[in-house]
Amino acid sequence: MNETFPFQVEPLPYPYDALEPELCREILEFHHDKHYKTYVDNLNGILADFPKLQDKTLEDLLTHIEDLPETIQTGIRNNGGGVYNHQLYFRCMQGNGFSMPDGELANAIHRDFESFDNFNRVLTNAAIKLFGSGYAWLVWKGGKLSVVTTANQDTPITNSQKPILCIDVWEHAYYLQYQNRRADYVANWFQLINWEYVDTLFQLASQQ
Ligand code: MN3
Image 1: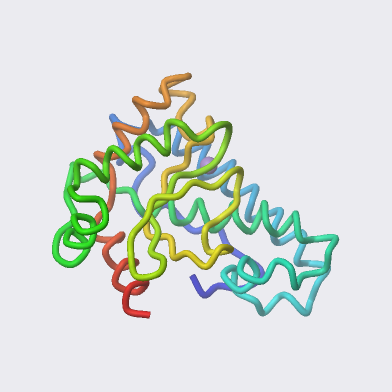
Image 2: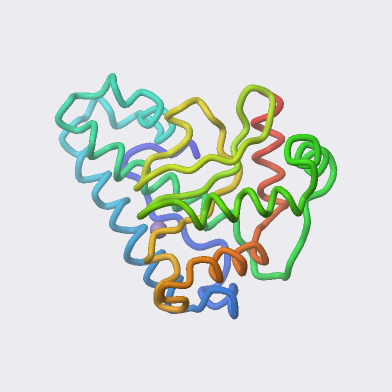
C-alpha cells in the first residue's frame, strides 16, 4: 500500500459474485462501489487542500495522525482508516472454498492461540461482541499474534500493530443478507479467508 494522493478505488480482486453464497453480489456492490468509494473520495477531498501532505502514503498519514493539522485529524482518522481497512478486508477474502493457513503462520497460530479452532473462537467472539460498528483483527505485535478490535474506522497500525487479517462488522457488511444475524455472517466469513494473502502479510510483519 504505497499509493499517495489522489488515492484510487482499488478494484475488487474477484468478481462481485465470487463470494456467493457466503456473501451475495448485492452486498459486495454496495460495500465496494458505495461505502469504500466514499471513504476514498472523502480522503482525497480533505487532502486536496493540503499539498504538503499529498506525497504521504496512507500508512504515513495513519501512523502520524497527531502530527497532522488539528482540523483534519478526525477526517483523516475516519476516512483514511476507512480506505485502509476496506482494502485489507476485501483482499483478505477469496471465493475458492475453505482453506487453512500452513507453514510458519499455522505454527504461529498454534503457538499463540493453542489451536486453529481456538483462534477461530477468539476471533469470532471478538467480532460478535464488538459493540456498534468496527472491525476485529488478527495483528502481529511484539513478536506474537493477537486478536484485537477497533471501533468505527480506527485501524491497528495507529497503535503500532501490524494487521494481517480483518473482518468488517459494520452492519453494511452483512445486513442485506444476514439482517441482525452477525454471528452467521462471521461464521460464513471464515469460509472466505484468503490465507495465501494473509500469509504474505504475516511474512512481511514478522520479518521486520
Ligand atoms: Mn465496510
